[in-house]
Image (cartoon, rainbow, N blue to C red):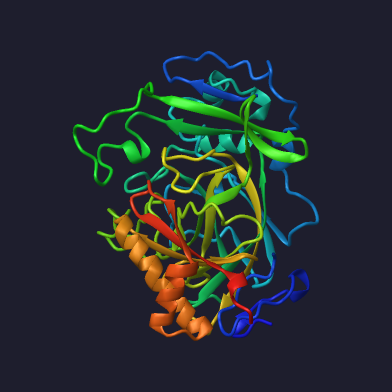
Length: 415
């Protein structure tokens, strides 16, 4: 069983207990259309495409019945644009152990200057596949503060009763589902890791032959019993939806990454508070742990991704509106300095820094600390095990601060 002062457990909803000594963990276990900004031709989307069974926006817009204690829609009053307000009135207050379904809306199609119906139908999407949430948010843009903010549309905050600065918030991700049967990925010759202000870029670096303003409209649906992204007739990428942003309200200080205005943490760079982590394994069945900086923790989520590779090298994934169900708990007896997570197979320990080498160092340091605290290993033993058995993956490299995640396999521990 879990040990420690964990507020709000609903053990009847969880799987078999973990054999951890101190750290509490989880117990859960048509085709691609390339559209140029200068061209508005709609892709066919039907010819030669496999039969798919897409979900409809109407099904995902209303509150689902009987599957969570609370529901938070992604309506204009419930979202922030590009930052994590620390003084925003909570959209919901919950007791630890309660479940919440939270709807999110992607920024792709909701934040551009052109009206969403004209913009998205110009990319080949039918009008009836555009969420009302997209239209309502776009209409609410005027008057929203922009200085120091980024582009994500983020739902929250959810206030978790009992959470105080210095605690650890546990976020159990129970389910993540697509709300629409499409997403958008952007590519450009000088975007993502090929940006000229990317670390290590050189003036004579060659550029890819990609027209400016390229948007990839990617259909998603069910084929042969599994959800996939229909890249082409010959390429189907399994969907693995997750929220790119999972955060508590931060403690922003001017000069920190993404903080240029007092009290405003832009949503682009992740940090100790979580945020735009873009760790693709933070999907259903995973539990995330975040340090708490403010009373109530003030949980935010958004930036839904239908699928993403480690690194997110173009700068975007399949940007897609998602809906998730979460359960929260508060830990009073532990402190952590950076996000951690776990699923049935791995402990995931994250290192974050503007320098990728430093991020790898931070992740290794935190893995050594974890193995010492939780498994009783000496620093020498822990570093040896980290080098032998732990995979350090580059989770994200395009959001100013970069994320390296150490994956500690659980099956190496016999007790």
